[in-house]
Amino acid sequence: MARSSSGFVAGLTAAAVVVVGVLAYQASANAPADLSVKPRTPGAAVPSTSPSGVPQPVKDPLAVPVDSGSGERVVYALADRRVWIVDGKGKATRTFTVWPSTVDPLPGAYRVTSRSGSVRGSDGVQIEHVVRFTTAEDVTVGFSAAVDGSTPSPDPARKTGGIRMKRADGDAMWLFAVIGAKVVVVA
Image (cartoon, rainbow, N blue to C red; front, side, top):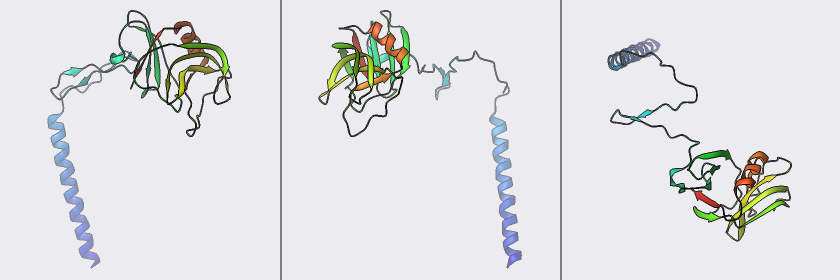
């Protein structure tokens, strides 16, 4: 019995070697002649190729979302947890990540309705540069930074609307987002 099982294993091994050899031959027959790596500028986007073989531009993850309108505005991307401060020419002057609250605003265009230099957040943390722009689920939604530099871990059981950012980003937001400034929320 041991002899027949070892013959069976030897047969399987030989078959596997043949399959690997055939696949390796097919791969080498379809490989381009020049496999050299071409140097690229660090940080430069590498174009992808579509099924037709035509290079496609790579989306810059830091680029202002195309569906965010035009003109001077603050753009908040819910899925990316990112904010862009955009000048009148549509160019981002600053972009940064944020820590969302438990209540998200609906996608759409808003205006800054109120601002506070320094207050206590609904989580009890002292915050500064509060820029409010809407209400969702009976909760005021706006941007702010914790004075102590902490990042929030909101209690999912509580409704909070503070979108927190680093203090330096909060300073930039405070200077840009005056009363009436446009805020665009995208999915």
